[in-house]
Image 1 (cartoon, one colour):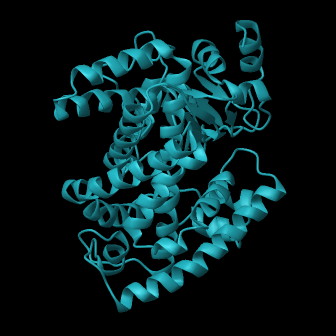
Image 2: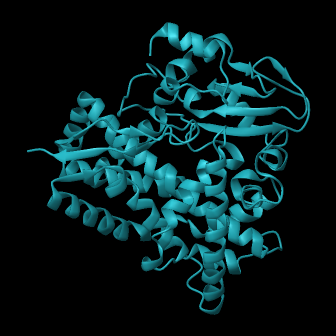
Image 3: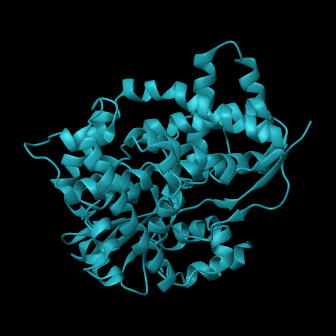
Length: 420
């Protein structure tokens, strides 16, 4: 995208009318918005924020900037719809006290020990996927690798039987697809159907788990059923919809992390060669390899944020970035733009897998920081590290296909072959 084209899109920027070249590469437009109007008034009366400091200020002030989405989602979905019930009940779109209760229960099951216990199974899963890819001489980075990992991990956390996991990815994609700024009738219909079908499935699974509970220190569903926070347990509706949230939160974002990383390495061969060289030098030092891969994962998250957009609503008059915002103002927080803010990141448009002091916002910030960030980092390190160790000379066999969405940035397809 040329600078002139980016400036033109920025001048008339409207989330409801995004051109295809923006969806392919939004970053030049984000840079133009940061420079000319970092707190931009949108045609629909909302505000679009692109500076790192402004996003952090909003994230910090949860008392002023609400995550509750009842106001926004009522006209979007209709108050009687399954999508409305789901998205206004899930952890990410709520304020305390519901947010506090659910987060405490989830964090109690995602302890350091519990995540460490997942690593051997994750390694076996990844190695099995790599074995199949090697036998075929390649495959698709997304469908055959990146997307297969988080579905299995979240399935394990919730105790979903392996032979019942087939629909999980499709349900998740349909429900998250309905969060895009512009919702087509087909997207809404698919999202509503996915919520209904997943609720039907979860009611049976929850009933079984009530009769036969597992270890609440390792099984998130048992912990949500039995757990108590602030003297209260979750209602059945809260329980079911936060199980859906766990699948969605852990699925597409991690798929995008792994897929984006492997495509980035193909597009930045010098960084790929540097990463491989550093890993080779540390081949007999597991802790050093973990640190190298950890820094790389954080840079992939900064450079191509899996989730590009967040939202808040001002509960009172406020000021952000020198701009006065009225009570009720709807804010879109552009994570993808903040993560390339030159005020925070040196040479932000360059992928630097050895970057230090990487204060990216891919996991959010403050009370709503992603509860599963340690698990996501583990999945990224294991998947990317073991893929590179097995296939250091992989190559894309055709141009990868982007998902064409503004909120969630990833690929639908990325066919590759194993060379050498």
